[in-house]
Image (cartoon, rainbow, N blue to C red; front, side, top):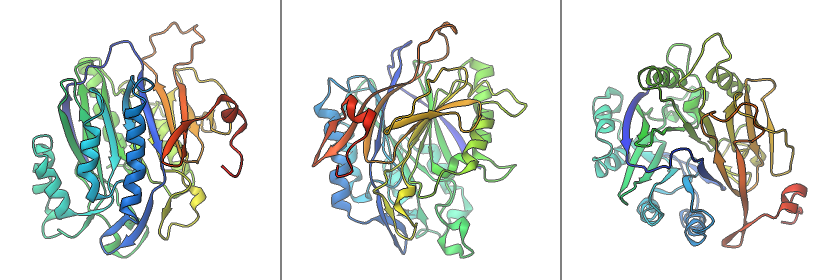
Length: 382
């Protein structure tokens, strides 16, 4: 089971204001190798990721309120990690960027933790005490990076390994299994704002007794009972080549308190799923059309209008105690605000979750969709 490591971060997030998030739903092309799945064309993938960062930097006025930048799982080649951190370091202060790396050997993951040991000391200790990691230096690891640029300009780099296998649970061959991470960070800012980042299937139940998500709910509840603070946002970075599975509905229903148990620590949590786009290809994963559909889920205490548009829609996952904003499958940048705690007058008609802009690729740049394009959808040749 994952160990939850609480980590204070120096983020000056204005109290009483919405948090703004940019979801980069970009394509990811992965190929199967001896050491897991790696990016097929590292140079092209880096140019794509860099174009998103350049767009955020060049349109600073438009993204001046950006707090969280979310990239998909497995989207960055290891060779460009330093380039990525250098580019993230040029973003404005109080910005959190999260992204997934291609699979790396366990020894390389250990080296990354050591390179950023000041921010990952507890993670290093958990890895060194893990008997499963001994003599397994070549075992592939699915890694997520959370880069926090604090209020004073300092860039902190946190690393997590996926706690669930990427592919191996569906095969008898043990060699297809991945190293299973032993920790996940709970970031706590001075503004009493708390968030976590998971890698895709870490959100799902492993079994009834060692569930990662059950562990997170219990920890958030304890945090609520001791400090009256809850988990504000749970980010789940994905590269999901499967159709929408009923298991997500079951877990979300329990997470938001449907099953005979109150969960005050996560009652107000916004759950953000950042996926890759329909242009993605994971070797041997089947049809590409199963990719896409990033989404944001909020509890039923928040209002969410009924909308059906080509670019996004809302639903309640067939009667679950929640509201979901579900995006399309295309290559897009979605800029939205996340809801505050439900401290507004319950008679208010204000919708707390709003889409501020949607951008589509145009060559090496990104252009904003007009209102007509969002209502009617883009032409097939675009």
